Image 1 (spheres, each protein chain N blue to C red):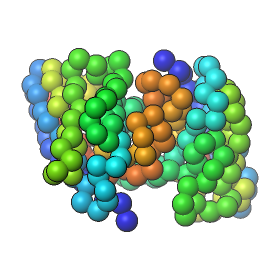
Image 2: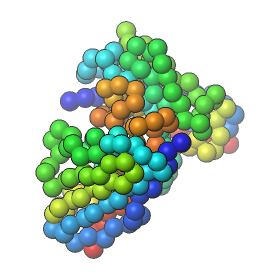
Image 3: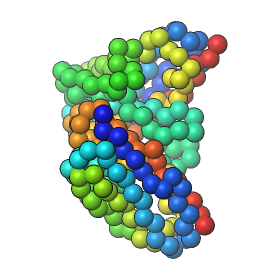
Amino acid sequence: QVQLVESGGHVVQPGRSLRLSCTAPGFTFSSYAMHWVRQAPGKGLEWLAVISSDAANDFYADSVKGRFSISRDNSKKTLYLQMNGLTTEDTAVYYCARSYSSRNWIDSWGQGTLITVSS
Amino acid sequence: EIGMTQSPATLSVSPGGRGTLSCRASQSVRSNLAWYQQKPGQAPRLLIYGASTRATGIPGRFSGSGSGTEFTLTISSLQSEDFAVYYCQQYHDWPLTFGGGTKVEIK
């Protein structure tokens, strides 16, 4: 069974930065593209970013471009999301997820980690 | 950005009944469309990809159809575990985008 485990969920003040992590112990992490998707309380899914299996390419939603940065360390089987300049609108559950290639359907999801941006 | 519109927002169906969910893209996505199911407090789960291919382990009562801009997810005989929110997602172009979701509730 595919396992994706997010961490880094926190209550953070507006304007601050935070880095999320997602570890993927149970599959060949380096063979898959990895995504971050978020869901604000009571709202739908919002795709944020993807990074290719070899980290050579990444793509972002306009809503986070320039503020968020996705990265990965294949040797550690870990995905990251660096989030800067957080606002209250970034309050959400953040999911990491995988797909066979960057522009593809998502076949597995983590359980999510909650980020609350509040003063 | 390709906009994805799902309808209806809420669908009330009796157990054993048939549910038909719609997803419309603002421009053609060919067959590059997936459907996901999400239950309260859980992560989404892949149901359908390529507009009509069921993911591994998904029961045959779930079927997807359509191409271009119009897509349909049909649940042929709703079971208690099928009452959830369903999202469509296009992966034809950047950025990837989701529809707003359809909540399937018990009638």
